Length: 94
Image (tube, rainbow, N blue to C red; front, top):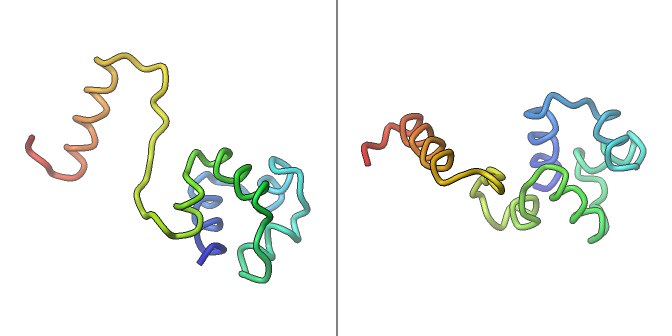
């Protein structure tokens, strides 16, 4: 559910509910309500959350479980290194 996804993202970024609330300009109670699936954010806030965590709105809504890494501005050489690291982690041999 949406709340589980937000909580997981928050924790993976080592953020408290207060820190995330401050970053999104909402109250801690709002973040708590999202995480407990009591309320859902507005569309505008959904976009803000997705931009903050660099994930798609589809990911937040559990319509797409792929993860993304922002690589804008990296050279082709850097991208190749990142791809190799990911393949090593996944155990691929490409």
